[in-house]
Structures are given as C-alpha cells and as structure tokens.
Image (cartoon, rainbow, N blue to C red):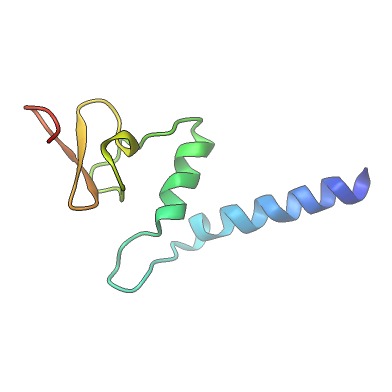
Length: 79
C-alpha cells in the first residue's frame, strides 16, 4: 500500500513538473500535454485561455473556436 502511494506521488510530480518550469517545445509553442494537464487539474476538458493549443473545437470552452491549432474568441460561431 505504501509503495503504491509513493508511486502515485512520483507520477503526479512528473506530470506537474513541466507546469512549474515553463517547458516549451521548439517554435515556442506550449506543449499540448501541459494545456491538457491544466484543464484536468481544473476539472475541465476545455481551455478558456486565448491562444491555448487545441486539436478541435471541443478543446476550447464556450464561445471559443479552435482555429489554426489555437483557441480564439469567436462571435459568429465555429467553422
């Protein structure tokens, strides 16, 4: 039981570590995994951050659309 808790703690640290050091990929885009982890930690499956990376419109919340791989505010709806 103790080993399981230690393994889970270690895994959680490995998942959160990129958030703390601001790790970036080449081209200065945030890692998609970091945005996903932020959403999971907020208990949400969508991002309300303008410019967050996305793969489809469901990755962005409410009135935002996924255009060019980034969440942008849309007043007319998503394509």
